[in-house]
Length: 447
Ligand code: ADP
Image (cartoon, rainbow, N blue to C red; front, top):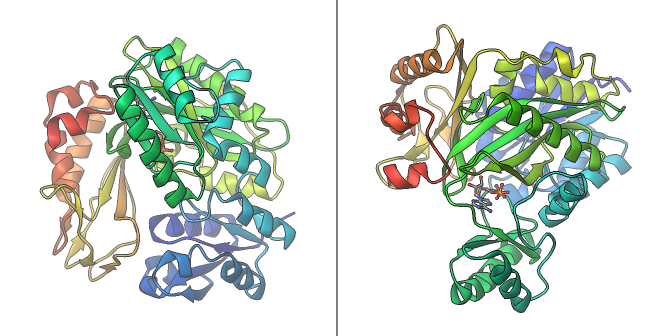
């Protein structure tokens, strides 16, 4: 089925990114926006725009009936959900399917399977992929948690099966903190995800987070497109991603790519997806979860492979098979993505919404800037604080670091605080420059 008109059910930079892919494919766009986003940049370029409700996302970007009726009235044949909001909501994907509107992403069954992290871990194990020692499946009770923790040894981490965005996780170092953490995580998971299912795994000390990009066409071909090292995190939220990972040797890289394909195949996965691993000090890797959506950091992989991931999501959804093979994927050079957030790094990264004065982003060789903001734009307080992504691509890591420093110093952003000064400080840190980072790095040196 050829797709000729798409509803973009998202906002911010990803809405613009999807619109750009559509334009290049000759597909018409309908932009669904909330009242708080009436000045969004992509609305100026869309073929049609439809206001779907007030600022709070529960009444707009998360309102399924509203989005579906908008799609029907606007006469689209597909919806791109972007990331966040309804991107991994299998019910939404199902409703789209039953209304004969193509959901651009994996099918509802795969979304629901990998969205339950404890089921995804069981699936990975069955596929012969290493996982972090732990409960393997859902915890039945507090007693169950205590028994497994004693068996594998402290520290352990309790995690919500439906978790995401770094929420619903608790580290425990002994029986008492495990019992307290068990109940706290349950409450948090119930409130945030309406699902109190928990599982437990060994807490790895200062691991690296390395993930593999997957593309599957649903017609038998599942390819991996190299890894992204996302170890630079704050409160389990990524801040900077790079490829290749400074920590992988070619053999581990090959094995990790194959493991990612094995998980995607086991889940009967199609579209773009990401398989996430933790890597310990010895270089061993363990599957932690699979994300059934396009990710914020996808441009890193687009830079190194030259593959347009959003275009491929659309082409796969319209029934096209992947027209290249695994051996054609030859990542080149070094790419880094810096998440520029409207946050004050000198005040515990407190959100800094409001009107931007003068705004001038960097440019020049090796620089890609994906953003929906401009001079005079008002960053609304309702949503996440990402205002743009600076993506650098150069021949090697050293050159990428030099270009990053030059580009970050070119930003002119008046009247709001951003993470730019934080990244400039990071680029002076010897351990970061040598690629010696782990998931605890920012908390250790920058808090
Ligand atoms: P979410 O889905 O909320 O993003 P993940 O399972 O992907 O949660 O984990 C997010 C981050 O939390 C990881 O990148 C890592 O920094 C940390 N983390 C998760 N599991 C463990 C673990 N077993 N040991 C140590 N750190 C972990």
